[in-house]
Length: 221
Image (cartoon, rainbow, N blue to C red; front, side, top):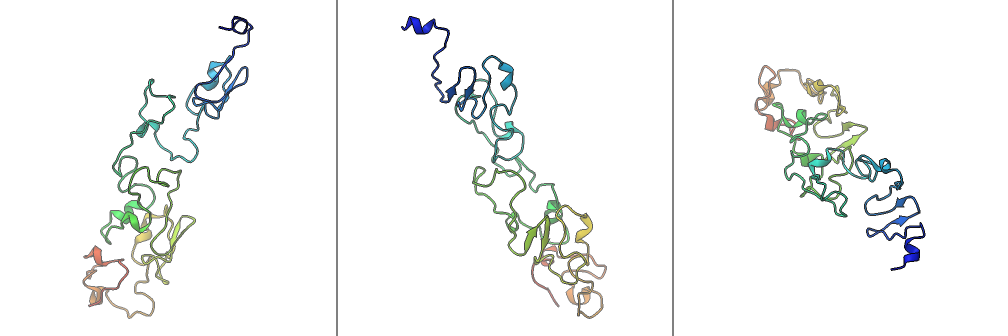
């Protein structure tokens, strides 16, 4: 052993997990990542977020322990422990309760809109782009989604509707009759809708066949 170097008052360090020792601080190490804790101040790395973002950059918001079970023996061990839920409702509702999800997926006025109509549904939880930060990517199969509104879609496309570009987080009454097309539509003869569209709507204005309503085609009899 080098007794002189051992007793010279300057500790010789070689960080086993990589990084740099700068006399009083560590940096770029496997345990502190981009953090630069002061060796003389243990409190400088106290709490989540001292070593990595909370959540880390490019990571979805949420409760950490949903996907990363915590344990003293496995925390800061150089490996990311992952045990995420495998079902769609493990992290968010199925359907989610945010915005107009329920209005599209739990309704009696038309067939439920499937997730694929607006989103690229991943085939696995860890698929690229799935666990990135909010908001979720929206790519409707038709029309546009811009600034929180839908427009030019088959379901909101009526030029004479009162709300052709509804806000995703807007008024829940946005789906009332007349919002998407006129009642009656422009250049349409007046009369009770059920006279010509009785397979879809009854004389009292109730939708009787949700699967035939707002499906991109007009059912006439």
